[in-house]
Length: 145
Image (cartoon, rainbow, N blue to C red; front, side, top):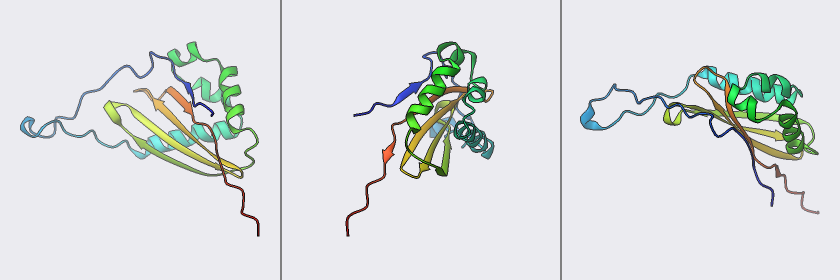
């Protein structure tokens, strides 16, 4: 059984923003507004940098807390180990959410021989606060005729 890799310092994403006060207090707290499309774009840029082998660029876009706990070499090694033997990358799907005032991007990359899921946590100024690679899901072999 393969374990997911958390590449997130324990101090990252600790700042929480408050709830919107657009609704009256008697109806309970309002739901946070969904993140804008710029967050999807930002997540896609990070995923493309990973696919292009530019893990150093990804590391440079991370928060100081992330960088102090995970070196660029560790990030490169984790990414290389995660997508080893999966072949050419194809479709990339990104979906962002905003739980507790933070922006989280869930991504799915389909390769020729498997799929990788990843999660990117963003800090308030857009820096990468956390990055998690999930183990590849292998595509089933075709059934014999």
